[in-house]
Length: 292
Image (cartoon, rainbow, N blue to C red; front, side, top):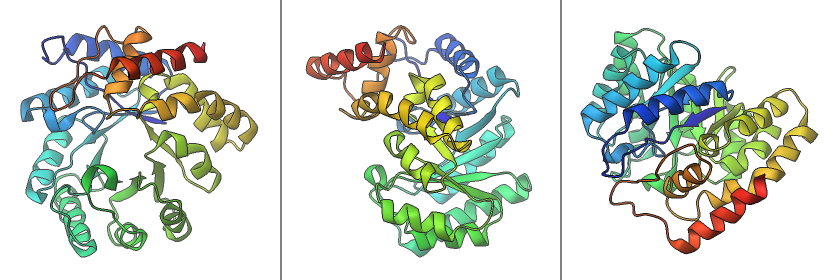
């Protein structure tokens, strides 16, 4: 159970390094298996290159080898993705999460070439350094077909897995059926984690793990051990939250819940995201009360 970490900001929008350090320590104490800074939930499109570097650096330093750090290093420009990968490797990350190029809408062959080029550059710099692809067409405007994912998995040895958030059960089941041995399939949608693990997926890179890391960890651990009744009980308890987190654009609702739960002092998001509406806040408050 990895967590796509939010990036805490001060009320004026500046990076809150102290809050982030406390948050990383709390995450590890709550049982999170690996940390994923500078992803979509971390508002990476609004981070400057210096801030991106700093967030990864802080994550690595606070983790101190206690858990792995899978750092975001994706871009819609292949050369930029390569440069980001080099940066996070230099900072001591344990792996890279790299997204399908957004806006450009590459063909399946373009996707294959993009990920292969980044992987080749990474391999030259740090042989065997692991990369995980991220497929989320709802965010990027392009879907990576199952056949392309499996082709890359078979052809590129240092690409070790995929975070799948295509919202296509058929597609993910095809990947699970055809993937090579030891290729990880991680859910990119919290609400889909349990059913996908029932079909053979390996875990999740979670948004809800920002709010309830212990429960998300326990659900995944139960499923991995084959105790599906226990996993199902946690899933059913958390389902309103897993859905409610996306009542508005992520991570606005998540940060709001984290403030309600006392995990963050404020729920500032950066433009073009806006604070969630009062109506959404009331719905999330009721969900939080229902968890206790």
